Image (cartoon, rainbow, N blue to C red; front, side):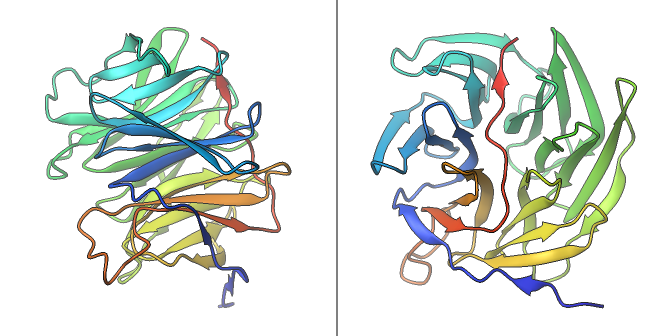
Amino acid sequence: MTTPRVHPHTPRVAVACRCELGEEATWDARSGMLIWVDVEDPAIWRYHPETGATHHHPQPEKLGFALLTADPDTLLAGFKSGVARLHLESGRREVLVRPDDHHAGNRLNSGHVGPDGALYFSTMDEAEEKPTGTFHRWHAGRLEAFGGAVTVSNGPVVTPDGARIYTADTAEGLIRVHTWDEGRIGPPRPFAAFESGWGKPDGLTVDASGHLWVCHYGGSRITRYDPDGRIERVLPVPTALVTKCAFGGSDLTTLFITTALRGRDATIDPMAGHLFAVETDVAGRPGEIFEN
């Protein structure tokens, strides 16, 4: 068994935001800005690396993701109450779809616009106790659930060629893969399992070559897997709760990393909750624009 290489650069603090639960980073190539959310202290954050400017937009309820639409001032936001178009400056919301209405204890978690223009997102039990969550694809007014029941979900993310969909069953420490064939999402197949001491699989990102980057919640690292499920590299992160990563910058080779503060002792983990950045030797993809 070959030993995976360790990424040669250490992530640096890009924004000292101290998010309770930073999540779901997305790069907007139009504006050159990174967008992410704080789930527990509900807010949308935006960061412009070239100027260092940050913008903080508090929200009235928990949200799991904020994705791009054709209007740069309007985001597709995954609130606890459902998916909505959100105009950032006015706060105006238009609710578009409400999944899992029969599960009052659920909330939306991860979200991703695939190369097919569909919204892929997950729901989870907010108390992180019962398997009442699942994964969804929403396109042209049709909502489709897939992947079975999970307690804590992360993903889905879709490969650039649209052929694969990855999901994470965070509570069980499992990453699964689905194939997309003739307009249908196939059943889940095992892709990778976390070992003891690795923490739990959290946010997922696929780079331009189809490799999967997985954040370790409680594991202080990110792992890059090749399409066969082999570990290509590990990237240590100087805080414990690593939640999501996304490629950005002018050439899409800077990896931005969200983290969480919740439950951490700041004297032991002083960089918990910050946004990090690190240079890589691979390119990612910018956030897709939802236009439905």
